[in-house]
Length: 98
Image 1 (tube, rainbow, N blue to C red):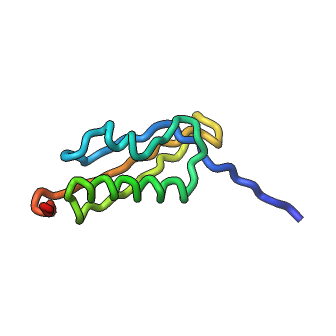
Image 2: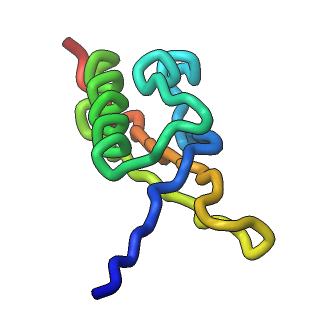
């Protein structure tokens, strides 16, 4: 019997893209990610939920949050640091005032 084990990648950085109405430091305060931490699907899901909550607090109810995880390059060995990208694109007419 052979067991194949794959390690989870480590987080290298997070890039926030497509945001306009929320400051980067607000994302960083909600997400609280640290370089080198183990990146899991659960962690990514939790970060997405935190970003959605932040936008809802600001009155943007129809925001979509996506992520992209970059794979290691051929010049680096696995597990390699991974870049996580969040793309959030609220549209001005999707803002609901309280």
